Image 1 (tube, rainbow, N blue to C red):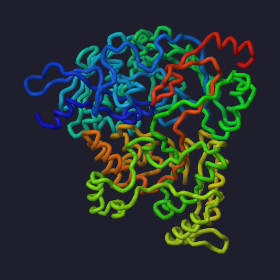
Image 2: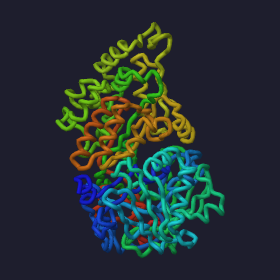
Image 3: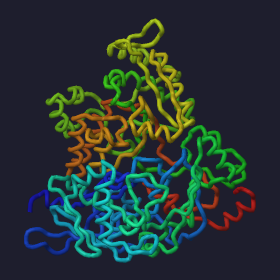
Image 4: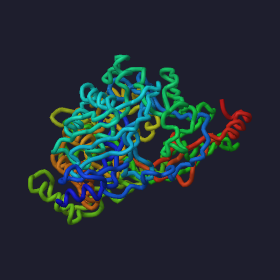
Length: 636
């Protein structure tokens, strides 16, 4: 047996979350492996498993009683309500048209699922087991025969194949490109048995993950309703999940109700989960109005993302009287890659010196002290808060990956010897004059010269930068940055638009700079192509920056090809190092804890899992506490 085949048998293969349903336009899912069973002839053994993990062991066996991080005795009932910004006009997440409502895919379930305390393992959910050869040329999902759609009709392998074919015809281009490169054929072997045949040149590590990210849709329902997944639609695609759309009021409210006849109510994996009778989403035009509504009891759970509000706002009567609980909860996740990003499609930003100069003028230290009450740390890496972030000078393993790219002229030789790029450090005053001088020198070298009117020009063109934003909460952060850029001679401005306009402009890449957000995976793979790859530069909503760099593409392939944790870590270190050196972002901030506030009628198991807060998943409602809050007049 070849060593590579042995690895495929003894380790498992897992696609990072971004490799699953994101290709469809919505969420995601991963997969897993385990035991050995039988043989397909004398040549190749067939692995049969309830789960799959490429680099390690699964946390859960096939016969677990309940997830470790839930309260299996949690009561059912009540409502939890949250808020979101903007508006909506659709419930179809699988198109770039329209603005899909919050939680639009809440009723959709995938063939495979993952658990909050096993971030790199994935498990059969709509299947009982999966089978695949050591070569992973194909995977067969043995589907459950008790899965029903929301209307009670059964879901079968024919529905799964229909869904795949539908997305390959009408789905997002990114989905079609991904699945077209991985899946050659989907074959229904029996009513509840479906096989995905993989392209021989597709990365082995992601094959099962992509296949298991398919959702449960009904062929009969879609055909009878003439549903087109390429169009915005206020009717959500009927799913099989525990919650379904109950009512909505555009543009202000969406309510989802728990389905009492949900097929999976008695599954071990669902014990202690899906506890609320209803989930309500309230929409607001700005964060200030949203906070005032929370204080008045218009909704009941709030994730607080404003440092100012967290530091100064939680002294209102509801908190003083004990009706509202502000709380800090642990967060072991990777830090978000939250940042201002340049649109590299703009000619002015194709000069690295311009990007470096602009980045020098954002003063995080002043912002954190003066605006954030010292609550944040600086984002420094795309894999921050983990051992995947690059540090110091390149290791021997990194050098082996970077040297060929230098030899080909794809990277500067300095990448081999320099310390990893870190964000600039500024002083305690808003305008750091040392960084101003350095930025000015960079722009002079790039040919952007200051004129008599104080503005920089090159070939008669004024250096102009517009920040696109839809959040009033960012005004106090971005405007000082704009002022610093003006002192540098840049015609900078902030254009705050409504969320719908911001989404439309970002889809068309019609911006200079904007704030971008996202979280990488602990086991990154082909999903990186959506974030940083050349092939998705003109169609990916993740690659807003417009990164299209052959060195980055080559390192992504190294990450995808990794066959051990050590190889993966080295490849990610090299990729992180190069991405940071490209300076297409101006890193913002993060904190390694959740700051939340909620009306004191919710409870949760302790300790919480490191990778999930879980308020909509495994928290529950205390009816007695709710009645006490109502009696006190704390809730509307």
